[in-house]
Length: 277
Ligand code: CNA
Image (tube, rainbow, N blue to C red):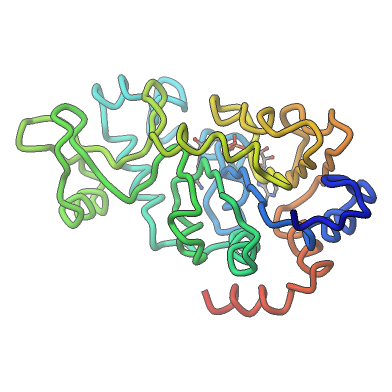
């Protein structure tokens, strides 16, 4: 038990970032739950922000509905919109944000239990967070398989197809898809296998997610009642704010984590890593 015995465990001194920072100093197991909003500052649009979100920019792909781009049935019918999107989101084009580097600081300072991410941009890896500390809840561009015979497809060949936004086919004739979870598909085993970790957390930080895609959206409810939950987001989401130990901070992720980092005395180190990345 790393907590000061004079203070009841899992209790915040206030409902603000300064109190969270004091609490973090005593924490060993922090869990992050993140979504597209942590990557918008890198230039990757999120799904649902009005005007700038991906869904509002998908009109040119002539989809029946925006979600269809990640629908496995629609993909079978017409894989081109997804390939156009993959061309846009392919890893290597974007730099991690301050928020990604902030999460990496928890790994560096041995305070990170897990990052649960819904993102497929792999900026968590680019920020230097070890693979084994990340749960890619909706898969990622790290692998690629035939959707029919499930055979692995060559990475370099797929890259070539994605660069041209041309769908790739397996020898069996089936379509090839990066290992991203589509609506209608099961989540990766690593998601289910990591669920129990949520109950071990000293602190849970939710950032940049509308908490509207299930089962991920139900993760914050698995947090034990007396464990502090912090939301850093442009808007209030889910039921965070309804518990006594909840803190809601509304605004840009990068501004919120900067304030926390300053309170923790991590800011200089963090800024230097960010500039190098
Ligand atoms: P979402 O539904 O688009 O919600 C994003 C949330 O973040 C909203 O509540 C926004 O208000 C908030 N937000 C946006 N920008 C900021 C910011 N700078 N600071 C603070 N808050 C911000 O995205 P979710 O991740 O919740 O939805 C789940 C989908 C989106 C997952 O399946 C992802 O795969 C998918 N997605 C991923 C990416 C990516 O990999 N970067 C991009 C777009 C969509």
